[in-house]
Length: 79
Image (cartoon, rainbow, N blue to C red; front, top):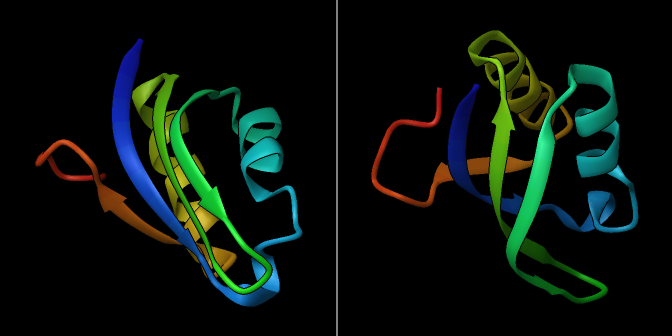
């Protein structure tokens, strides 16, 4: 199993959507919330993601395709 620590920044139109849940279910990724701040206009969340390397890459690409900005939270590369 591999892990990634990432910070997600959600655009306003995605704040109400369950994109993290969908990513977790669709790509068999276990998300662990480390920090979150969500308002009506913006969402920011730091997660530790655990899964296979291939699932993590696919899950991160899914988030990005939904307009979520994915940044490394630990100085390593995201993908």
